[in-house]
Length: 163
Image 1: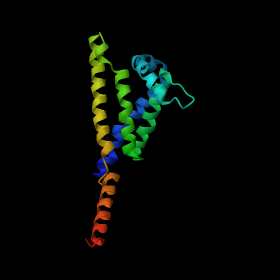
Image 2: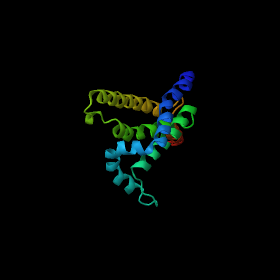
Image 3: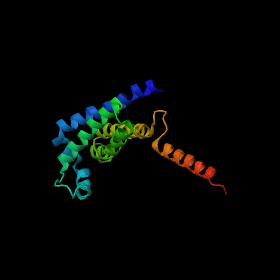
Image 4: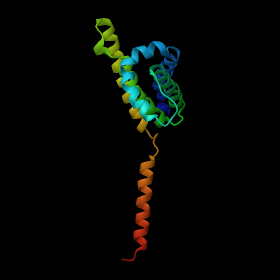
């Protein structure tokens, strides 16, 4: 299994790194394309960041998303906090997919088919990322370790109690 992880993580991450670089290079075009989605997200994003001295517009959201894709993709590919990286990538894939691949709005048959393929490709990658986000690489998770330690402590205390 370690060999599979060593090969599979960079394969899964490759699309995010290249897509993130593309988002950073072509932010103006992609921001215009994603505007129907970013316009809906803008109030929620700005409300969530209201304590910060920033306000994100469509282009900045595309750039931030691209940066998360590059950094998260590199983290996943290199095995640096791969579960966190996979979860972050899965979360950012939702607005990416709905912002960039709205096949139901296309009138041209060829464009509609192309956008549909990309939409479902992203959906498939999200499934892979969700699996990667719960992959403990054969090691027990923190939650399992905590439950085990609590049980061991409870059992130790029960042995000490003479009742």
